[in-house]
Image (cartoon, rainbow, N blue to C red; front, side):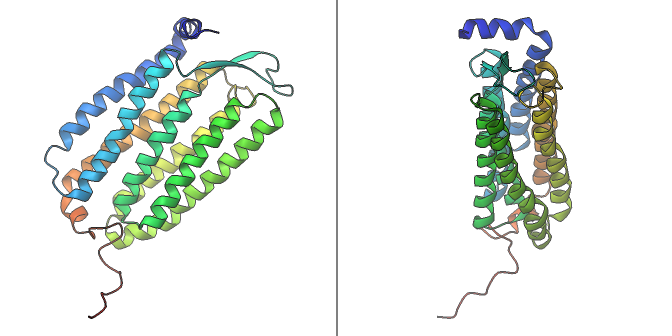
Length: 265
């Protein structure tokens, strides 16, 4: 199908179309709100948290515009063995690009909040990008139904790494940094919502096709709204009100306490 035909197919499906426009509107509002919230933040680490978090709605508004215009959507014929084998199914592959760019920014903000070190932050972000890219591969593979699920398993393996760092490593770092209370709130919010994405993938048209494309799209959009915009508001509101706590951390990545003492000359 041409891009114009894909665009028309999106327009004709009002439920699907609304799932895109809802995020475009909320992303736009979030950008303006977050810029306003961060107008008086002066600490460099707090500013970096704001910049990383602000990138989330900026990426989202760009991505959802690509989806609503038909630019990052394709119709793919499902392979033998799939519930919709032989049928062309609308695949919103642009969502994976969104996640590959926005979720690392969420992890960067969380890592900075937890006062983690560069190694843990790098590991979490790389595993997260790997999760998104292999998820994209699962969605685009039409040669073999089994390989679609194999890509899915690889993506979930990357996800396990991210979950471990969030639930174990960064939780310990946040205790030392003095940000455990807000970090644990955001950690739980993030983990619960992020678990929904592979579940809805498996249930949607790309998996076993229990849910249709529009319902799956609204599930993704709804989770995006909470996992991105509401998450970001809670985080930035706390950072703006507790800038002194953020400023009290070490200038580099890692908590201000518990490090090794400098060697004598």
